[in-house]
Length: 303
Image 1 (tube, one colour):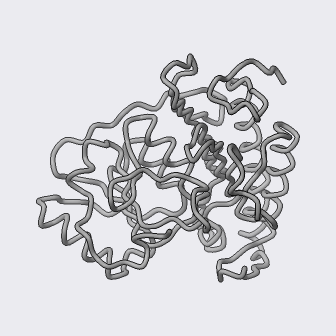
Image 2 (cartoon, rainbow, N blue to C red):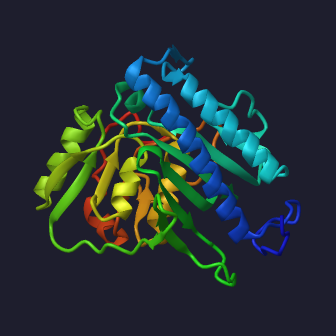
Image 3 (tube, rainbow, N blue to C red):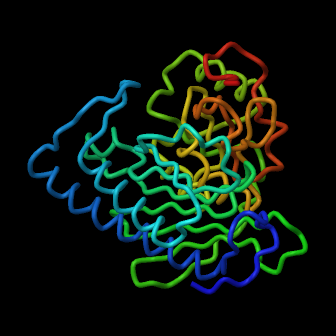
């Protein structure tokens, strides 16, 4: 691999050609998507075996196969950068990592099991708590969403977000300013919880009208950057690998993903990998109007 300089990289981390890196990781996401599609098509004919992890979340052979493919490929691509995957067995030293890959090899396992087709492959490159590169693959659509979020203003690598379609063409993703009080809001499949009812009431009292759009997994972020969703409130826990790539996509095109205090998420900064509640918007100018008033929710803060 070309080892051209990337000045934002800490001295202890070998330097990378960012364009080469993006292309290679897109290919990895596509390969994982093809593998998951095979598992999914088999699952449509004969239900897949499901196991339960310690946190009571489901895991399947598809999760593990995609994990193994992605982890092996990333280690081969960047042997100096560790990988933190949802299915990683030992990441006890992760707080010492300045830069690492953050991966959800199959985001939306429950949707996969329910045969909704709403599942994704999430791969993010994190440095010093910030997401530098975010990729979301949508296997059944054979699409990959890519965002390069260069955080150093002196660097020549531009901030850019685009979608790669099945024919290999690239479509640059543009900003989607929100005008008026009519919103398309992504509601999780858990939106019957009391905190969602209270939040919807707050929006209504603030003069907003909204159409609720149900979608699973990080696919909601893809719909946001396509302009189909304006607002995504998540008022119960997620994990860091669920949000990193989506946050990167949103930030690059003028959106935001913030906690209930209005602060952007940072990664690998706490003892646990659970996120607190968040509000995601396609237009960051919308944030002051849609941040909820403080209310009790089990997901408000995780230290």
